[in-house]
Image (cartoon, rainbow, N blue to C red):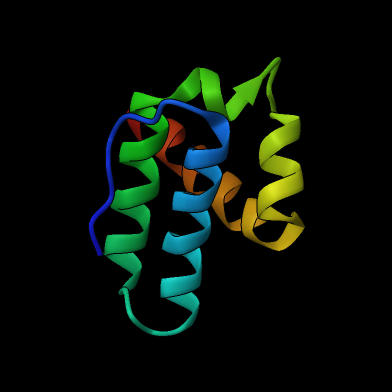
Length: 83
């Protein structure tokens, strides 16, 4: 699965994140690849993912609660490990 690092819109970002998480759930990606992909996307697009500490409205609408729970845990574990 090819993942871009920089996205033009929040919608493009949401589609990509959906693809990453869905591929993991379908056993097409291993856990390490899932974590690395989500962290890479977040590092390069933090303003398109979070506003005032919460996921943007577009991401909430496009990704859904279950995917965002996975993404949030990955982001928080990445931040904790860098501290």
